[in-house]
Length: 114
Length: 112
Image 1 (cartoon, chains in turn orange, red):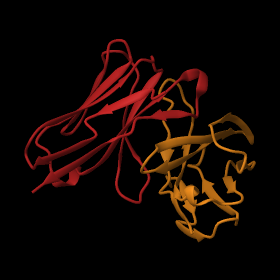
Image 2 (tube, rainbow over the protein chains, first blue to last red):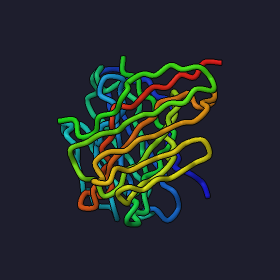
Image 3 (cartoon, one colour):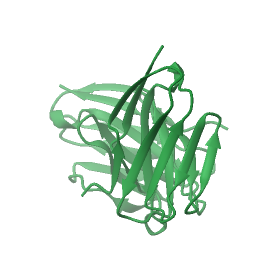
């Protein structure tokens, strides 16, 4: 079974630009979550989508947004990039089968803002 | 508020030694996961524990979930250089499925 895929793997943008990251979950997984990982803050939850609806949102500014398509693929968008947005962005998918609530992560997109 | 605290933050040991990493919280989780992450890659799921007092073994790795489902430990026997990496624990709440709360991680270095 194919794992979670994320594209692109690496991205360099300049301040003020916007960026769109893509995530394809494991087949059959309907929940997709996004996390930001930085050396100082660790893994921080951005948002979660299930059946094209955002169900959970972390404590990030409105510049961070996302969506999910009918095939469960998800995109996240960051507008007006700031230097502090440089991070590894991770997507995780889950079948949400209780009681384990396991998430499976993709390789991430390394975003560098200059 | 840090819901999950991991200790130690850094650990450097010689190959063949044993080690234990701890994950503590004041919250009761529905389930808790342990991941290992290598630089530039996403976390890889090692194990999920669900029942208080549960012990799971994965080759040389032993995972334990506290009786009250608030804490967990990971014990590695006879560490190998291939065990080097960042170990993360993550807790999930049934009422907040899809959102895991992560600890800050333990960076393990196993020297030959």
